[in-house]
Length: 156
Image (tube, rainbow, N blue to C red; front, side, top):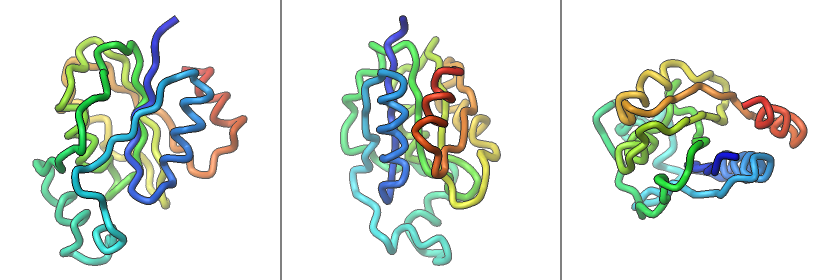
């Protein structure tokens, strides 16, 4: 049996709730990917071209700093990474997370929450940050029931 980690980034708490349910269903450890500087409501205003999240997402090379780097990725075989979809892809803090550890040979499965868009080019954009990992697009889990999450996790 492989050792699993659910790592997640949640700016407003939506993904946090889903990640906790995924971790419970998978029998996995849970790790929060935290930015060094927390996002405020103003930072997340996607309609403001000067909002922090908009500026970050418009610069694909931008890497928000992490609050810590103690996820101990090396002890896990399978890592499920959850995040909200921002501008049709994962927030750039997910790239920061992937670039902060060695994911060589790891199975990485993505899951997300979204206000309406899908994964877009997320796998492609994240693969460069962990080139030796096996990154798979998982599932959008917007409002998913516990039973749906359990069924999805069992199918992995």
